[in-house]
Length: 223
Image 1 (cartoon, rainbow, N blue to C red):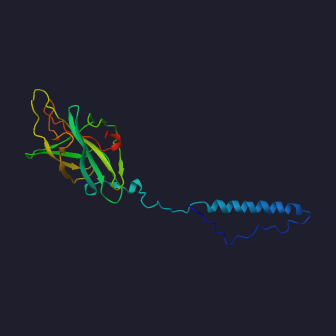
Image 2 (tube, one colour):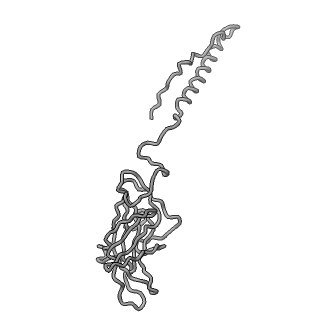
Image 3 (cartoon, rainbow, N blue to C red):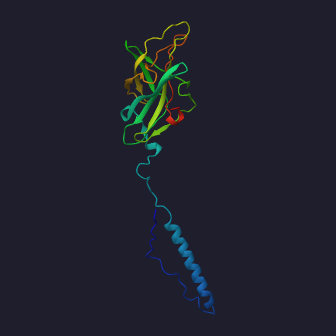
């Protein structure tokens, strides 16, 4: 940034008249020099200060002006799928498809849909072996610039529990709603890395095991 010095049209040279009387000629130069230096310091200090009302540069949105990443601004897909240590799943990927930044935080609402029409809400998990994710409060607030992405683990046990010999029919689709929104998208629940749909296996007490993590950054998850 360059600053341009503007001379005050009302300013005058430092008055030094009358200082040469009574044998004070030797002090005249000294006094005038000190006065001129003081004026120069005042002018420089004032000229270097920012003007009031300066705005942020374009594209640097403040947190207050950054809205939520609602469904209409996002591309939602399933990626990094696979099976590990008795669980199968993947990462729900939320990509900002708009031209401005947006923020996302918390658990997405996910409903598993089976081929026969059953709709089962996925639980909010506190940790997963798949993705090695552990919850810590508060959930992170992730700001997405255009085309940036955030992620949430979606996972389920892939083996029957207790005396069961098989799991219920898997989820073939997922209905996904971002945090803080009421609109949703429906995507395939196929896990290419596991060669199966998202399992609908239950625990020993019959409760569904499929669940989701909070939304986080890819850097915090193995990939």
